Image (cartoon, rainbow, N blue to C red; front, top):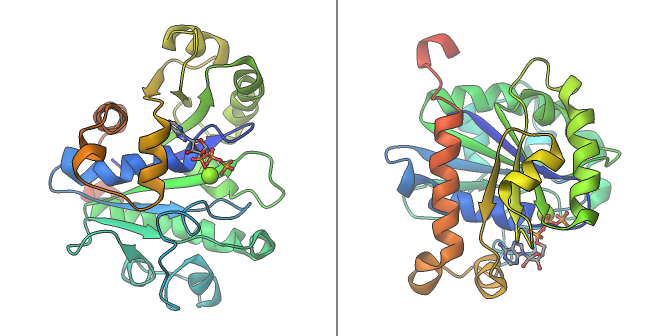
Length: 255
Ligand SMILES: Nc1ncnc2c1ncn2[C@@H]1O[C@H](COP(=O)(O)OP(=O)(O)OP(=O)(O)O)[C@@H](O)[C@H]1O
Ligand SMILES: [Mg+2]
């Protein structure tokens, strides 16, 4: 496993919630591996105002890395993360709360792509919340370099049509990388196969729609009924499928 980026084309289909749900269950499914969720939404973080709202240390976040001298190291990046559990099996690199801070981040994202490969080779898988496509300061480095790019949609035309155009536009940017996959939150009247065919992707993975669980998770809830919910079970299935689609980085080849 290496770098998995999640994005969307229109509206707020659930990129951040899906990314956070997937990160929450990642080490449990991929035993022996840790996960780092990078919060790269240039429109402003949905995590800083969500599960991280209790407060973030001054030394944490991508802005701290941006202010540091390049090149970055894995150790330095991890030092700027928030651990979601005492062992640090699940970490978040907080993004920007204010969209005006997105502009200078391009070189930092490019440097982080290289660090992500090293981290992955060392047992830390990397998920990236890229936010909505088309932002002026879109973190293009992740779109080009992610081993797997997942375009999140809702099962309605207003969501799928712009995503179809985005999938087409993204293909040349992928520099010969794998074709994007779709992720559907609430398929509505459609099957995953319908949505895959409309999007022009080979596969669409489903995340269960559950307003109560989604809200509780993003309010920092965990354990018990959230863990046992159909939404979190679908997040676990998604991790298993993603692991099949993206093989582990060979530490020797990665060097
Ligand atoms: N699986 C889900 N089930 C039910 N509601 C969900 C689910 N995922 C997300 N939502 C809801 O959809 C809304 C948008 O979610 P989220 O912020 O994750 O979307 P986003 O695509 O990251 O949006 P943005 O582009 O604004 O960053 C929120 O109200 C959230 O609770
Ligand atoms: Mg978001």
